[in-house]
Amino acid sequence: MSAQQQYLHVSSITSPYGGYSQRVVPPEDAELTHTGPGTPCGEFMRKYWLPVCLSDELADLPKAIRILGEDLVAFRDGNGDVGVLHKHCSHRGTSLEYGIVTDRGVRCCYHGWLIHRDGTILETPGEPPDSRLKDSFVHGAYPTFERHGLVFAYMGPPDEIPPFPIDEQYQTPETVTKAYDIWHPCNWLQIQDNIMDHLHGVFLHGSGLKTVPNSDAEEDPTFSILPVLEHFEVDEGHGMIYVATRRMPDDMIWVRCAQAVLPTVFQAGVLFEGADQEGIRRVGSTRWVVPIDDDSCMIFGWRHYNDAVDREGEGNPEVIGKESVDFYGQTGGRPYEQRQRHPGDWDAIVSQRPIAVHALEHLGTTDQGVTMLRRTLRQAIRHELKPSENGSSEPGGHKHRVYAHDTVLKIPARDGEDDQEFLRSVGRRVTEIIVDTKAETVLDRMDEIEARLAQMKSEFLERPTT
Ligand code: FES
Ligand SMILES: [Fe+2]
Image (tube, rainbow, N blue to C red):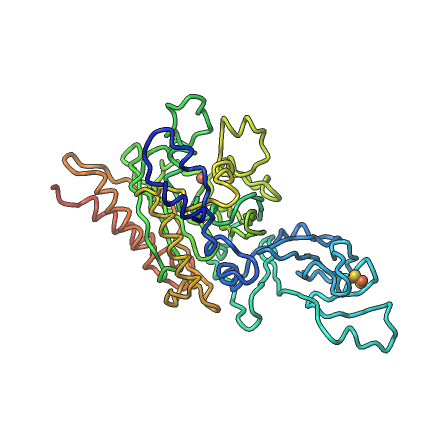
């Protein structure tokens, strides 16, 4: 009997002290979690532009990186252009991280071969002058570009290179965008699972655990209120959103929507919502989860700062960068006892095991977002999703309109009305407006969204008494 069969055989045992019956840990879901060369998920991810390091990390020295289980080296040549090469020199395998960066490429430290960022071998200085060796092959290289402080590489088939996703929020003229990264010693999917699990905010970030001894973690009072929570596939399953609608003090309703785009993009609205002022606030962060290998990954992200997403005193652009972002509990660099007494996302996610074992989970109704994410990811890996005009898992279709937002509306509850059901209807109407509004520019789209939200609000204020 295999370990998996043995586990399945005993998993229905309900007797107390059942540890012995559950001592066998079954394997992880390899189809969704393994991303090395040749794996189904790894080949799927390779069809997209992925961040691989921060622009700031590439100065006069090459940087060894590992992405999707491939050992690579990134460097900025003397002309300022970025290259991403296979790490081991094509001559005899020395790591190019010890190489010398030149105007035309990186020169291996061992025997001086000079390799261009496109993989062309430019010089083999120890070979005879008439040697044709360097013209007989190329070194492994990937296309790159930089945007807002992140270096992106495309590691897929050269004839399927996609455009970069449309990133409408950056068209707002006053937006300042800053890049950061955070290392996680766990599988990439745990990070994506976490962001589609909005309910954890009530307990991990809010005051939902107030009655538990020692649970005096930093609290966000707005998150501590239980939301009416719904999840929707968007863009033919290439994306999904959660919609969390809460009744807040002073007759306010807060609708929060965050968006995942397959395979690894996530966008959220604001990070610090007091829900005490009416209005719509758009994208505060955009991030990618990029596998290093199967049991470690990087978050590469952008924080966006403008009047629409950050009010005075909320965020702190000064701290954004290497292993640093301006919200609590996102890194593992804190003392162990502090992390035990004040755990954050990093602690909750990384401690699920290096690769979380889905077969050991007991998912409930509140895990609908996690279930939906895994289902659509599996469909995309298997090429079962239809193409989408917006987000798409197919080559050439990787672009997306942004749905993430936080919207606050003052609409009082009514005596005799089921307020939870009313909140649900408000959340759904707001979501319809956001998803359906398709103007050409971000500013036109915002104007249209705001007009439709105002109309919707007046309709709700005038709703007939039940
Ligand atoms: S190993 Fe790189 S030049 Fe010889
Ligand atoms: Fe969180």
